[in-house]
Length: 463
Image (cartoon, rainbow, N blue to C red):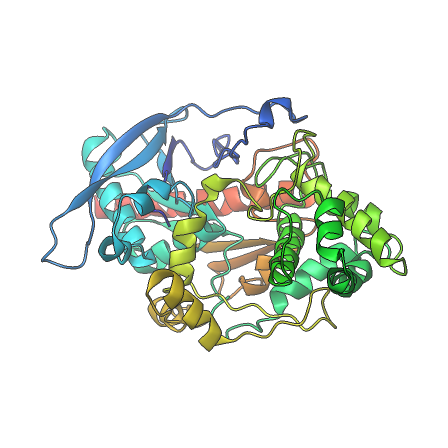
């Protein structure tokens, strides 16, 4: 997590029988320069105040006394001093470019999940001291994706500070050999195969089509023009980068396959995978036609707004998602293996090579990853001693393969959302939401209300 990232605190009245104040629009989608012309539904921007707290750069050492300003948001629309609760939305990996650009490698060393959780702990204690009525209020952590992992781990490591956690689309088991490395790409492939006839098969065949065209005389120039690339391909080595970029685009589409228009990673239509698959109805087509179809499909993701003049192979998402910081974390503790075989999935064969991965990390950041540290730190699959965590996962989300999808105990609960993409349950309520996510949100609120009730029962007994 970017330790300068936004933390959103909803000071709310989440009590049994009360109308739920939980706003699913906990993370407002980032907007792109062209978003003013994007054909999106109206959204309600939550009201919040921006505040800062001085945090230690290193919470666990005693020889560095440096601090930094951490930004957090407070939304108190539903605040109730008597009998309320605090919903603590754990930040994601985004909005950390400032941190990376203003920190040397010694301080990047403190960009870890452990330090982020300690930031949360200090912030909660500070809030309980300074906000009238907050001292004896229960806190619930919630987050999606990486933020969902942090929410779950926060409950595990600081159970005295949060009474429970909602971890949406949190792949806490996508480490080491806790799950097969090919599960991620298989789910992406399933999404595409279910969204249109011959869709995944066409994509599977497209890689060889690109290779064949690239090897022809004017092939690189033709590919550059056919795909409307901003930067032309000039050498065969560029082709692998092109294919990686295309593959990442298909992955991102599966993640954000929402039932309505959205602009989370890019401005997109409703059910974007189905829209893309319209261009892949026929798998046995000439290579040139296949590439023109690929361009039309890529255009759905990169130019739904109609504003892009060319396609930039160096970007797959809005820059505010914190790619630099995440790259560093992926090279230290957040090592999440993926692989593909080209048979049970629609991608080129790619094995997981830890040595190659480590060498790339050392070349880029001067660090070597520790692939077993996260399971060691947070327990891997041995987490049954913990309580009050909801793990929600959408069936369409490729990260669900590394998530908790079955109940572990009667308080470590799993909710699987049919037709649900990446943390759909935490997004703003929409008239086009499938019934499955509506029911999921109701169930999540039911469990959270119970945690609040239990907290106040214990508090009364102590008094």
